Length: 371
Image 1 (cartoon, rainbow, N blue to C red):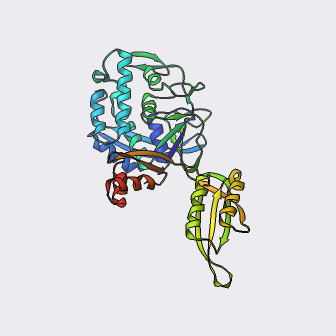
Image 2 (spheres, one colour):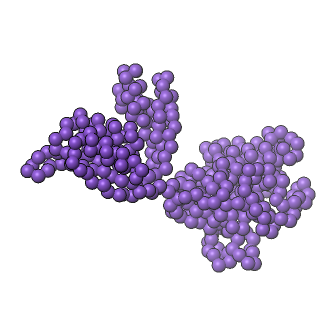
């Protein structure tokens, strides 16, 4: 699942969590993840609120514990109990940013404003919500930097806060917002999930969520917008060449398919048929681009001796895919990854089976287990 964020008025940890909940993440899943940290004295809920003309979700964190400061290492250790790498990475990034700013090792950083319940709940909650939604890629529009000042334990600091700016290194940013538009927790989560900044990626939209902030703005809703989508299928026009054959051997048909694939056909296959007078036959199909259709037409007619064929223009839908590799018994096996699964390359498995003497089906299972 792809997540695209529009930080309309900014992005804070609680606004991001609220937007993910509004888009369909389970509040119970978030609570269970926070429970695993061992944090006590808190209660997390969500409510529907009106902000400007929009109805959005706002998260409420009630704290019954006076502890507002903690060593960063304590928060990181608590996050490690959840099994959420994004939460650990976000808190580690905060510790490193604060350490660099104050000239102390990250392991010795003591968090003041960021050491309380809110920071841990927001970051662990966002990581849990992302996992619950099945998000694998995060994209974000340019972030509004904000302006003004913020009062901290270290005194009055400019907005954006120095820690926020450190966490936003590499991000696309813009002006045009008053006050603290992006918080360190929001920036840390985006940093931890390797957010890509820019326009919305091509995707099939599945859900939308609006996360409300605590401030009321006079002229606009105070929201972060979350959009969830599946990878968009690529659509393009292709040609199918077909011909009926009742006097061509299976060896010739196999040869033509191999030649067509080698010449650039997207696919080639044969289906059985019964022709007039009950004669058994085969239908040869070759799927190709418009550019290669002429050359492949000549190949089919020349090799099969057919007196003609049919050309049909079709729309091809192709889901995004990529190829990775695994090492198996000293050889490299290519793995074809798609949105819904992964499959070892048959030719590589066949070569490995021939050299090792192991059954092909066992090697296929081992390749999947090696991922």
